[in-house]
Every structure is written in C-alpha cells, then in structure tokens.
Image 1 (cartoon, rainbow, N blue to C red):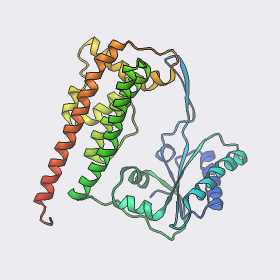
Image 2: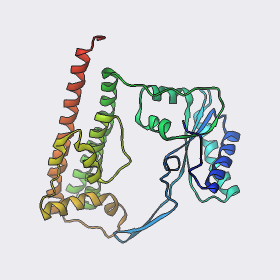
Image 3: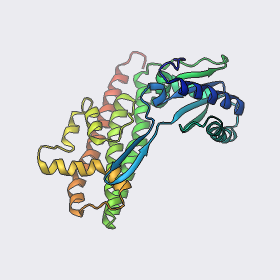
Amino acid sequence: MKTSLGHLPQRKAEELEILTKYIRRAVPAQMVILFGSYARGNWVELDERFDYGVHTTFQSDYDILALVEHGVEPYGAARKLDRVEDVFARNTRSDTPVSFILEHIQTFNKYLAEGRYFWTDIAEEGIMLYDSGKFTLETPCELNAQEFKGQVQEYFEEWNGRGETFYKYAALAHSNKDHKFSIFNFHQACESFLHTIRLIHTLKKPRIHDLEKLVKSCKVHTPEILAFFPTDTEESKRLFKILNDAYIAARYDPKYTIAPADIDRIRPHVELLRQITRNAYDKKIAELDALIDSSPTK
C-alpha cells in the first residue's frame, strides 16, 4: 500500500498528519488508511452548481479507515471517532469534512482474502497514514469459479433486490399519482439493475449514478443492454433524458413535474432492464457452473 502524501498540497498533508494523531489518541488503531478521492488525487474542494434551478454543493471528504483489533468494542470506538472530527475541525480550522469507517483488522483481511470489491479498492488505492507494524494485510486473492459464483449470488441478491424494491415503490407512487417520487424511484431501480450487471461480471461497482455511463460500462459484458433504451429518435432521447435527470431533478427541484403519460412510456423500458438483468445473471451462473463442473479439483 502507498504511504506518500506527496500528491497533496502541503496544507492537506499536514491536516492529515494531525488528524491521524487525534485518531490514535481516541482509539487503539492498528492502521489508519486514507482512501477515496484524496487518496486517488481527484478530490473536489467545492463544487457549486445550479441544477434545474436548485443550488447544490459538493465537497470531498477525508475518507478514513481506522482498523482496530478484535476485542475493541466497535460502537464505543465509533462514537469516539465522531468526536475526533469536531476536535480536528476546531483545532485546525480545516473546512474539509471527515468520514470515518471503523473495522476490525481481522475482518478487513478476511474481505481482502475474499476479493470483496469495496475493500480491495481501499487496499489498491489507499494510503497508509499509520501502521503499528503488528499486522500484515492480506493480498487480494484470485477467486476460483466456486468462490466467484458465491459472490455473484450475494451481489445479485443484494443489488437486484434493491432494484426490485425501487421498482415496486415507483409503481406504487405512480398509481397514487405521486409522479415525482415515482420517476425518481424508477431511476434508482435502473441504477441498481445496471450495478447488478457490472457486479455479477466484475465484482466491481463504479461510483456512478449517470445511467448513460452505466449502460456503456455494462455493454461489454451484456450487449443486450443496448436494447434497454435505444435513443435513435428524438422522442426516445427525450424520455431517456427525463429518466436520467430524475436522480437530481426529481429529488431536489421543488417545482419538478412530469407528465403521467411520460412515466407510462418509460416504465416498459425499466421492465425490460429487469428482464435483461435476470437473464444476464442466469447466463453468468450457467457459465460458472460449467467451469466448476469441468474443474479437475471438483
């Protein structure tokens, strides 16, 4: 894992050194790891926008993973870390928010050994701010077909399940004439289904909400995804834009409206994506079962 903060401005590096000291005073951390945008180098100081007439702001956090030994009570330690953020902001006058994850180091190593996507991203992209030297991190392993299948099944159950729940909320809201809530949940259903397709093929989930980008990231694995919402006419482009924009517009714009007829036109596309996702999962499981059956170590 990387250890250098050389890509950061000096002020940011100094703030992280101070933050690490406060963390170590608060909890018996064995490792403190910076991950996320400040580790990758694509952080945002402050992004102010007017989307659909609504003023929104975004600012990157210092994302920190604090690893403690088994035996450290997680709830109490997490509350101590919550107080660290207040002390840090007060004493440094830093305007960068801090977001903590506290985990047992043994559990983190288990996730790495299993190749879990979020945790392996931290190991690959993270920067070690403190290491007690008492523990060694596992190297993410290459999964065999049986292990890969197990994670595919888990991720399908979780993310396809989310998509189905959002779909039900959207349909119910539409029948109750809450069309703004309906289109937002149809967007969330599509996002969840598309993440499902990525996960069952790569065990990776990109940090993307834009449906157009998600479709592009899925088509190499599931070419059938191009049938989900063809934009070959002005009307289909208009409808897809309504669906894609709903993530922000239907959530933040108090004056947002959508014609019920447009939801009726969009809904069949969402239903098609549900089926494409299910078919992609069934196909992937069949491929993995064939690999398992042909394995000499079966």
